[in-house]
Image (cartoon, rainbow, N blue to C red; front, side, top):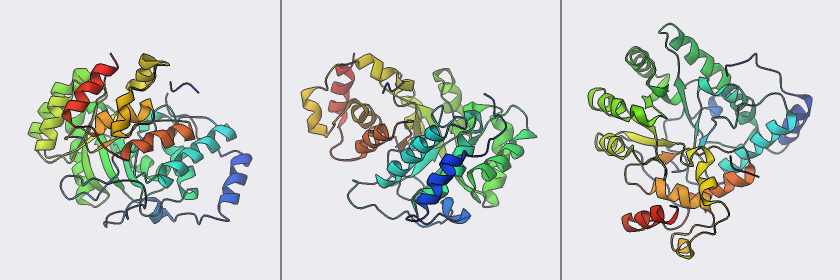
Length: 321
């Protein structure tokens, strides 16, 4: 399979998926509302056989360097087979040791679908929730926040960001208040547009933040300066669009991996792209999105084995030109 809206009225899950979920409950106990959130303050338990975990800045718990994004891929309608496919993505994500799942009100029905599926996927102690506020209107920020909590079915979020810097001065005040109230653990900003990198750097310099989410990949490495700035100030750095929206797969086409990719334990191009990203010393976690369970397994394999050093990263960049 090729690797390549506004929030509508949220539909009830189709009967076919309800049946699948009922079957899942015979072998997997559904998480409670509290369990569906990573509300516990203790570190997630390591998962045997899935490779090293990295320590996050500022006392964050250890977190796997490969997470899961939901942009486009989880914004689907009431198609039972598509919903079951996403449930399998989540299942394989956690089975491979996944932790961070990222979403946003901007992503249509993605938050709703996560809330429907997470209670029926085994993830005890592993889920690390990240979402965003995305609105130009001050009064709508709290509305979105409450709606997101309800849609996910969690009592609080691990990370809450101001999405694409939209009205960030106003919304950061709300985020700080919610953090003080214990409804959010970490706060920050996000952007997926390189033209906003300089503004993001100014915000990182001026504001007390915990997290920067930004775009970084082979095609667009322009965020390195702000990434280094953020890491130097103790922020976690989360990378969106590590595949450049799938364009990197188009760039390499049917080309085989370089023979020397085995030296960094890459079995496929997804791992090649992701290892280059997460091996950057400023990066905490990358959040590739996928709708295909097998692709999720490929992505998660990037956290295993040897990682490229600086010289190898430079060689990797040359290899896909």
